[in-house]
Image (cartoon, rainbow, N blue to C red; front, side, top):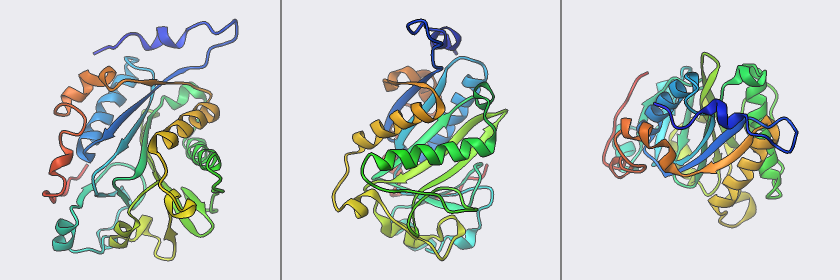
Length: 267
């Protein structure tokens, strides 16, 4: 299925200068994790077929723990009863990394980018994602940084953003999770990323106030455009309707079931 022509929209003139490649930024709102995973798969196939330009999806998930390809079930500390009581689902997924948490108040970003078209390799892509997050945090007066040998963004000894990605013929999926107004108590149910000696933090905790998610998304869009050299344009959810229909309907439809369900899904 094709929505417009990705090639045509990437070739728009820009005052005589070479245009930046187009990237659609779409905010899906609250969105069930399993459906978001399925949606990414459909959009990766669409990107490979040139049916869409590069994409940056924003979501907030209901409470969920995801274990990547390096995931260890022993790093989930809560038992089945407590997981159900706290409304947490578990997914085994096809990204890199160990276990992490997603939930309300977290800015989750799923870039779907054709890396080779931008001359990027996997290592450079990960470092560039970190740079986007570091620059976005700086807009709020938060000094984020890297820890040698680790992926993600840190403030002192506390992790504020996790990264875990997948590459399909050099098109990316999965992405990053930035703790904005996150309930950090949910990290007590796991050993985040398999690191038992590291803390987690959030923008809310560091700033002492609630942070508007729309402001965070705007900062991430700006810095994503700057770091990756893209023309990042916000687009309505309706633009993805053909792929959303393949996952079961409109955004958020599955999220109400999250508190009642407990399941595992393997890639």
